[in-house]
Length: 181
Image (cartoon, rainbow, N blue to C red; front, top):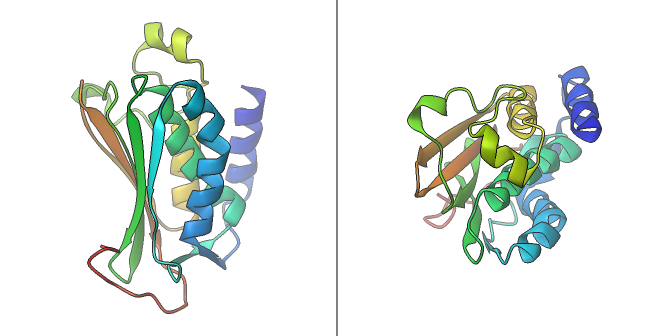
């Protein structure tokens, strides 16, 4: 709880995130490396669709890794043992979308708008099993806001969720291909 509160405080205090061109594939790789031990402990496979190496977003690398890690951590936490979590990045040349998809418990429609609120937990009974503070998605929302982007969720209860972190692409050249989106 203390670590999450400190992270959220740092992100809120740094509303004008640094504007370096950050390679998306490195953000994803670092976040996956951080969440991999928890995934392995639960028998969950993380499948990464490698984004184009030239795809960058303008921002603060630490914040971007934190947001991606929080999305992955939730996906792992709410997935069934032995399932998989997919992470990929797509671009249209203007926006980069980092998507994290799970095949877990999903989110009831009535809760979709509230999941990004601080301390909000969809299922309080399950939250005792999974741990967590209810701050991870609030952190993601603040990072998105700090980077002039947003975060969205699509979910079907009992089938899984897809969270999309949408960020403006960096200043460098971006190859827009069918694989990139």
